[in-house]
Length: 423
Image 1: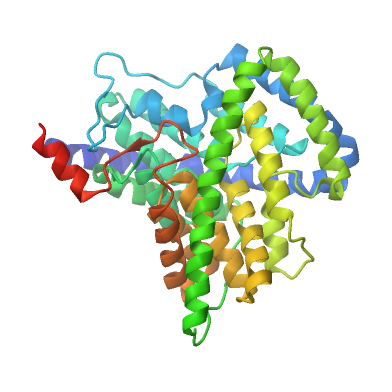
Image 2: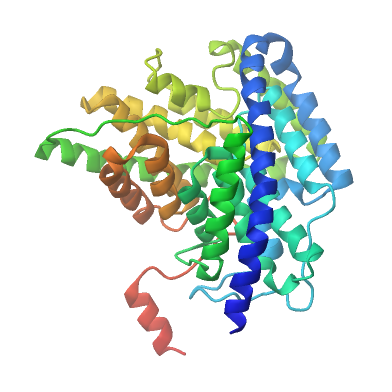
């Protein structure tokens, strides 16, 4: 009875959350549609000031919202609690429920727009997803239902991802599984569905249309085709795992070597900006959506695109640009898929898509979200390939994730039985 009451109340509030995030995503998406082309046209005047812009962002975070740099890790640890190995929530903040600071949403949207305007190789989904979590948190306070804050937080994340990428199913499952690999918080399923589709509709009404491109499958794949796709899926999974390893290692080294965050941002940000300008005139600035779009629309590409985008993304995230990892990772995977196609002779567009979704699956340690996002973005004709590639990449990533606060439950039946027997 208690859970039924929670689902009913949260489902009603999900409409309000979905409407808010639909407008936010529509508005923010339209802004980014202007910012990225404008930066590409005027990169010589904007990108040199990337380090200065980054230092200003660090100042804003420190003085107005010190936890804002954590991105989705904040949503996991600050409000959702710590998730134990077997899937139980070991810390439900029963004595002190954390809250998002006032003005958090505006600050995150503003700083994300600034970092993309000045060329940082970072994403946008992390910002919007954390804004969704914050709005879910605000809603639980405004309507005095703090006991439902976890369900409303998940509902907000689902609406945010759906509204920004216009992938309602992907948004639902991302929100359900990003906080703990292998654990789905099903009590939030119905509210998440309502908010996700509401935000999807409202963002479209605002005139925002996210990137979608239908890709055809291989008509009669042979045994060698399937074998090579399997090998490539393994490579994409290892690439996602390697990205997480490099990011974690670089953060540790940076925190030990650089004590003054402002100087680190100014110096390393400025040097990075110089390389971004010199190397192909800002090609690797921003979210990387330009790379994915170019690959699928027949523009020239370079076989080393994935390596350079990989390096610039790691550097920008480490020094403090916290817009998100999802879109840069997808662009790295897409360009790696293009390189794989060149080397193996597999269909170009198919390999671009498989690299895009499989590396995202591996790097974020999620399975259902990349599958549904891939199907909604690239069409149902390659659904089987997307599902298989994501499953392989997810299986070999070793429970590593760019979301460092993500909880993990035991994947092995043997380990589950062993842990149970020891209790």
